[in-house]
Amino acid sequence: MTDFSFRRMIRLCRLQTECTWAGIWKRLAGVFAGMVIFLCILPMLGGWKDPEEMMKVTEDLLKILIAAQITGIYAAMMVPDAPISWMMIPVSPMEKYVSIYLNAAMLGVLTLVTAMIAGSGIYWAAGQIFEPESAGKMTFLFAREGRNPWMDLAEVCMLSSAIVCFLPFIRRKKKYSQTFFWTVITVFVLLLCAAPVLYLAGVVTKGAATLMTGIILPAMTVANLVWGYSLFRKFEFDMSDD
Image (cartoon, rainbow, N blue to C red; front, side, top):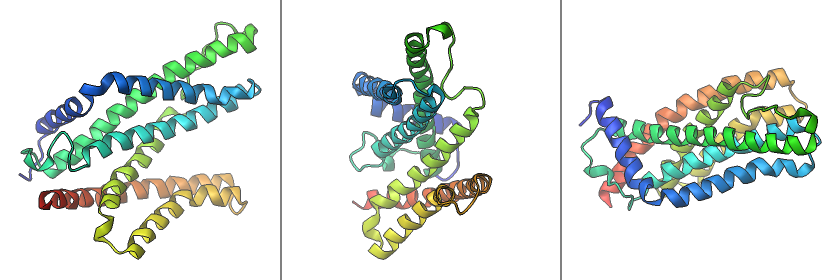
């Protein structure tokens, strides 16, 4: 089967969600809530000296959390003993690939919404303690003045595309030479960190670093999506041979 059907893809996505997460949703909810609350409270340990800076740190930590959650749901689908046997489902490889992304996106949105509500509530409560004069004022994470939530979402999506690409690549590492494997990992890390490192080293200005990031990340995203699909197909063939 090589054609793409949106209806089949949605059904597969629902099946993935039910088989992988439905049985352990209570445990996942507890761990998920604990991690979000911890990450929201962590920057506050500084004593409320600079709320805006603490919220920025929290938002950055939460973006890492979202990427980690996406890694978890994708990795759960990419193991030989997964609840769903990929090779037995009558859908095309593209439908499988897109459905994994959709599952990851739903988890990312859930994480983001929970973080906005829980984190914002925690910051509001802390504000009543440290700055009683600001009572009643609520500032939402990722929606603060001067903050572009769409840019934050784009960053998470671009990082997640690399995760989707590299998980099957890492699982197939024995198929490649050590030199090739570590060269690919090193080049990826260098490209991802190039702009921030050059800016921190004083080699380029903040504007130049932003422009570099705006060029590098979309290009890497496209390359990762295309290469990730190729690796996913090869991963399927590896599983069918085992």
